[in-house]
Length: 106
Image 1 (tube, rainbow, N blue to C red):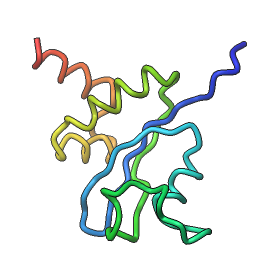
Image 2: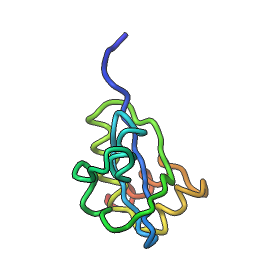
Image 3: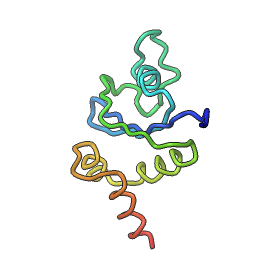
């Protein structure tokens, strides 16, 4: 059994309807940092989300190790917003979106 942390991919929606994608090993802590909940210190949150509160955690899924999480995060960030919306609503799954993108790049 490995002591490696479990990584998560997440998508947050800002008040302006923008979508932000990130990865973390502690989803509640990271969302709190982005939201400025608790300490009031927003310096640990993403600059891209500043001024876009309130924030909503729209999507999250377990990825595995850090290497896989970084690769998948990079791929999801390159998806068009409509594809990210399909992921959020369940119209598409992460495997399908990434497989389709890989075929388009071949």
